Length: 117
Image (tube, rainbow, N blue to C red; front, side, top):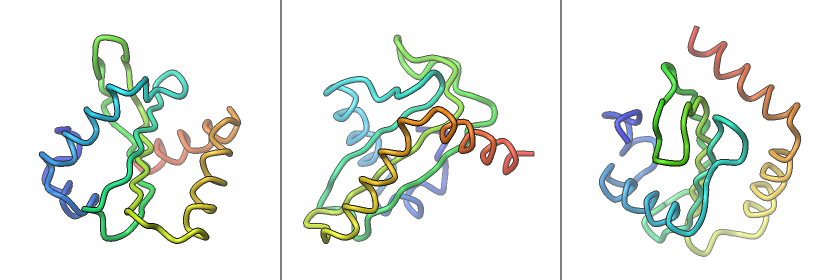
């Protein structure tokens, strides 16, 4: 999780080590790669004080995320606080449905590239 660096606690609201542990647990449940170079780790925790969706454009890309995932350019992290209200869950669900559209993913990648340049 070195790509989060010093900002991890501010971004995710929990210590970097706890975030890494949560992410590794999530990966054990199944692949988080939704398209080549795009990851969607998502999890719920009582440690989160606010639900968030983070778009992390990685420049340079992460060559070897793990033994199965390579060349990661975009990480979309969904952090859901425990007992989140229904309207927030519905908004996040609507967002995740958009991720099935390759054109939408391309737009997210372009936004990340523009931000990094």
